[in-house]
Length: 557
Image (cartoon, rainbow, N blue to C red):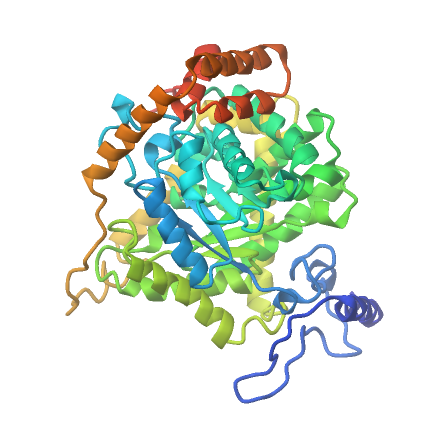
């Protein structure tokens, strides 16, 4: 790009920056030197390929979505939390919010993630252990007791039974007297990544997509601020993928959901802003920053060129980041504080919109109050003390970082082409479904994980405390343990709730839900009625399993 085009771009950026709202904050270095909100090529200089880098707030958004960077608003501190029963988790949420958290992120236990009630025989021993147990809308009432849902952004990390859980959340908000039109937050709902990596599904892919399409329509019409889909690369990366695979598989899934929305007759300029993303921030610092920058660029280009998006917000890739759980070690776990800080810094320099920092003891158990506070304070130290929020994309233009960004983008484009080849009609959706059926994604992730593990065992990739610097004076950590009494009490409360409801109303609401499933009507209103009647998660999911069947992954060797 020549000097004149670069200068014109800078002038455009300056006008937008001047017109935007900025925080009332100190934008100087620790020594008191004033810093510019963005840096670029020197005046009068050209820069080959600068159109791929650009200015913050301009297509292709490599340097961020907003001309102000974090000077306009900082990222949302959204700590992922949930354990035991709804009351215990409610207490943790109030602690997080009081300590400066900007939003909530709900972690559910395994029975809930699998659409089972707490007293299901398959739930035994798992209730409340890896997240909070939610059996009906009454649990949601307790989970958010004293928390104004109309004013608190709420993310929920669940995919298989995401839609009935969302309906229970809406009912809890109704009971608070909230205006549902004003609710804001994110529901994960990403079923593609379940078949690819995490394995928490209920039905065949097609019924899941049916429910997701209904949810997209309903939210676009009734709850426009709520994001019904958070396309997740986190679990793909945690399963062992490379950074480029995480990026490509995640964005391909996102393109699949765009195709789903278009197939429903929705306007891409209206529903695409309701798609958000969820990435892993791993330990390779510069590779992660490059991944985030490439993600914005790829999404904007494909939404514009392939799917016809014209509005700026439809081109924006907004994403939440969580530091890498797989990078945490049981050996010398205090070192995990350092790992998490480095990973969080990479997410911030990559322009994340919200962030969760893992606790040092999460490789051993759920976080204690103390370790959860350290994780929260890690974000606050980055935000308040380091100066990294003063300049948009401060590493932009680095020869190394730009080369990495281009390289990861090129690798992702090669993967997109292969996915399209897998499908018979050339769409991303057809390729994803065929790749799931053939085990294509899982095979490539397994190969990447195997290659990395070999490098660790050979000592080529070193992990402090594991295969390097293994001596320590550290003492064993006190970890959090969830009592078996939680399961006993949850099952008792569930039994009491069942006996106190109107069984005729419950059955009628479930029957109407199945009628909607058969007729092709949007299922969300009927499912909402079931949640209002205190139908349990297991009852709703079992009714749908009876109608649609269940999915079992084919055995592969």
